[in-house]
Image (cartoon, rainbow, N blue to C red; front, side, top):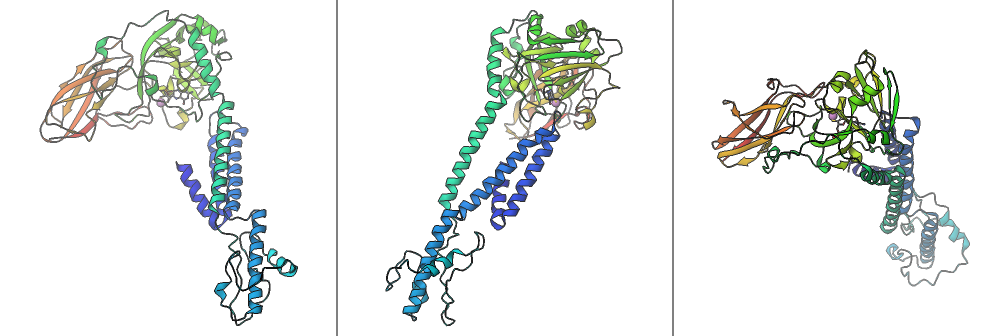
Length: 517
Ligand SMILES: Nc1nc2c(c(=O)[nH]1)N[C@H]1C(S)=C(S)[C@@H](COP(=O)(O)O)O[C@H]1N2
Ligand SMILES: [Mo]
């Protein structure tokens, strides 16, 4: 939308001076090139698409400009001939009937009686018109000096008039070319191959050697407006630095594990699938959430246990950080002790019974319960360097985020929604709370700063997911603020102190304001 509006603005500017439009396009190309260079996996060649785009824009702009002003070679000749005819007639009119009012020398083609048809045997006059300068500033084409008494300068028949039809044809052609380019780019980018590869993997995906227990019916309170216990893949939030989703061919995928290990290894996708796979319900949460934010989702993951893979490689004692690297060069630093402490840290290949979607890391991603995504959940993972926090730094650390990011105990009100109008009296308040790998023990709600009231908790499959809760509160007519807080299984109750998301996760109570009547 922004690009379309800016392009329209540049088009208008270009009407004043083509150079303004060109300068705007160049500026956009440079912004694009700078953005491309700031990518974690940037190389010099990554500026080419932006520059090619700007060049294509400049070409289209100048072509369309010329079309709109009808100054293409042919058009120009036709127009100037018409102009010549008009001026020639005008001259004749003048010489024959000096008293003729100027207005009667109409545009080319209109009758100028009583003049006889123009004879081609007047080459001097015919040529006179064609010497007028280029498209932008048409000079007068009067072939002969008009008598000073008669303000009679024969005008060309507006050869530079705005030609809407030609312009629209040009735009349509441009859209077709752009569409073809987009299709070609899509084919080249391999997104189609990615989908085919996913289908191939679906056929060979093994069952879990350690399946998770079925999700109890009581895990979902089934209240309309309340976040479901399991987030469907299509609704799962997405956070990453990838402008274009990386396409990874599972047949060529490998995971290199090296650094502070006794036996560096390089696993293929087949190697990974040969390992016993574990199924686990884990809620992912993004550190960048404001209190009450929506970047959280819960799925049933299937994957190989990361700890087993690392043990096979023989992790050295001095190592305390796993620096994982994705296909597109993003990096993530995960504490070794967290991954090795027995929790379901996975190299996941499936999500909610489906092959991992491309946006969520196909073919393999990390999932570590209890850590924010930026320090644990590497999608499209291709490499794990076993290292130390005092030696290495992951992508977000120099950008103002903490090197370590355990998930903070949090709770959120899903209904009613802030700003809602509700009926006075008994009202259901409900939401989710999370403290991954510790588990939620209690949720309390409060209306207008009165006493805290216990909420009812839904069932869970373990400590690694969020937990639904609901409570009935009494609302008198008027405006009310409803707040929530959770206590995790270590006995820690959420703090009321408000902190922003950076550097290591927001704190404070989620509160909403509703009006009852
Ligand atoms: N390759 C890669 N993996 C990544 C990221 C990224 O930018 N690139 N972002 C991380 C962050 S910040 C989060 S919160 C989770 C989000 O996972 P999702 O997009 O599957 O919900 O992915 C993590 N894994
Ligand atoms: Mo995140």
